[in-house]
Amino acid sequence: MKTIKQALLIFFCSFLFSCEDKEIEASVEKMLTGTWEWESTDGGIAFNIHQSPTTTDKNVLLIFKPKRHYSIFVNNKLVEEGSFTFTKQKCIHNHSEKPVIQLNKTINTEPGVNIPAVIKMIENLDENTLTFSDENYDGIGSSFKRINK
Image (tube, rainbow, N blue to C red; front, top):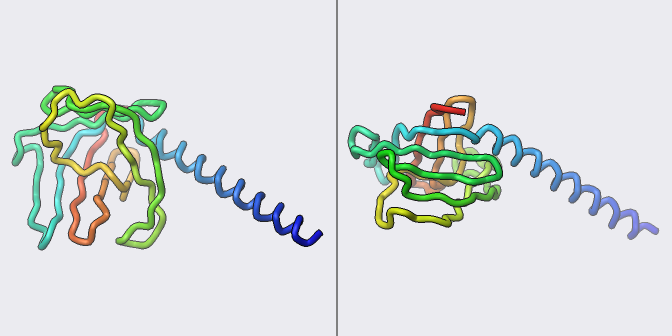
């Protein structure tokens, strides 16, 4: 009888945490939906990388659509689109669990076009700001601002 209770408790806790993860993903997905304009990419060994639309002559738009679809435009030209999924990973900066976006490219219309932005772990997401990091100790991060919901 004791083992049945333990098994039910384990099952219930797993179900509860699974539901909570899905609710968090849905909330993050809802906040992501919209058009984001790339502002900068910074980092690297000795913080030596500093890129922006001005320094690269590249305007990057990242569009997250409902049902986990995305598009990336560079200088108003579609360069990539596909679907995305979420995973969770422990952040090396503050050791908390954060969402990670995995892009599943289905169309690469401009092979070889360098997208000067990092799209991986969501470090910060609010109404108007989106910040990603590549989760490396000498890594880089990219900032976007919302331009459309």
